[in-house]
Structure formats: C-alpha cells, structure tokens
Image (cartoon, rainbow, N blue to C red; front, side):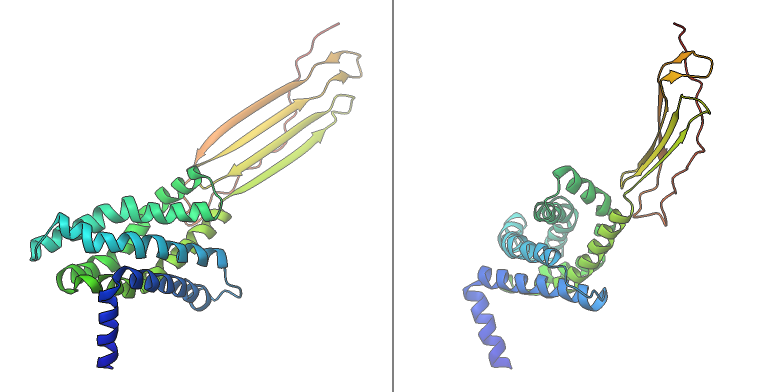
Length: 275
C-alpha cells in the first residue's frame, strides 16, 4: 500500500497538470452520477447534465484551478505562515469563486444547453447567494488545510477529493434550481365571448404569465365587435389593454408562487358613431 502511494505521488510530481485534469474529469462525472442515481433516485440519467459537469471539471477545475493554486496564488502571496494562508484563502473564497468559478460554471451550462446569455446571467445572479453559503461551509475549512499543509503538487488531487462531495452537493442544488425555474414559468389564457343578444359580440381575454423574474404580468384585452344592433346603429371596435405588474417573491426563497387572478368577463361600453 505504501509502495503504491509512493508510485502515485511520483507520477503526480512528474505530470501534475495531466493527472489533475484526469482526476477532475473522473471526479465530476462520478459525483454527478451519484447525485442523480443515489440521492435523487432518478430512473434515467440526465446525460446532458452529466456532460456539463464533466466539461467543467476538464476545462476549469483541472486546467485553470491548477494554475491558480500552484502558480498564481503562490506568486501573489509567497511564503508560509498564517497571514499568507489567510490572504490566499480570502482571494480564493471572496474573489475567485463568486466572480470566476460560478460564472464559468453557468457559462458552460448556458452554452451546452443552448440558452441565451441573458438567461444564464439571470440564473447566476439568482442562485449566487445560496451557492456561496453552501460553498463556504465546505471550502473555507478545506482550503485552509490545503494552503497550510498540502504540498503544491498534491493540491489538485486534494481539492478533487473534497470537490467530489462538493460536486454532489452542487449537482443536487442545480437540479433543484432548474426544477423550480421550470415550474415557476406558466402562461394561462382565458377567453370568453358575449354576444349581447344582438349582432355585436364582445370578447374578453385574460392572459397571465408568470416567469422566474421578480414580477408577473396580467394583460386584460376587451374587444367590442363591429356591426349593427337591433336599433340599426353602427358600433365601432373598442379595445382596452391593461398591464398590471404585481410583486412576486422569487421562487428560490418563497414557498409557492401566487396564483393568477381570474376576473369575470365584463362587457364594455362600446363607443358609438352615428351615420
């Protein structure tokens, strides 16, 4: 066992970046599969979701983070000691993760899901507070140990070991976020027609659209038809559109989404013009 560990240690010393990328690819893919099959108990694997995590592990975790932890941070804050460790920890947790790590993850996710940049950025902003709280619970103590005690060539394998559990947590959180966004987007249309006992018909259409944004919009359209009533007077079309934004707590933090209000059909007073 000790001989195998020494062999692995020497191999990682010889090719640290290649081993780091290989480990992160296997780790992120396996962690997402465990999240899907064991924790969420899915009958079928979401391979697109798994591909997102695998690509993120290859490009960002194995590539960029190798340079960050082995070259960039040591050059920014050289030496050892508690103050150096705390400086590296602050940059990693307060700057690197919120403005680089999570944007990179949501960027890869947006591209692979063929979503718009605006949608990806909106999701990133909405999810960031909860993501950061969960991240700090795992990574603040873990990275303190990494910067203080782990040799440079073993940092990516060490981070990958901790990240296996973190990726499982992140995968479950992303599934919950996506599920909430899907169920929070609805569109309901109610159309009624009133013939008014004459040749002039009125149509009342109520459309309520709820989106993951912080409001929902209800549009009421009332259309009075053109024609002759029983007295022979001609009535022109009359259309009224009302748009009323109503505050809505974001679905990530609220227990439920307010149900749209359906109004009873109202027959408008049509404007008339004699001829």
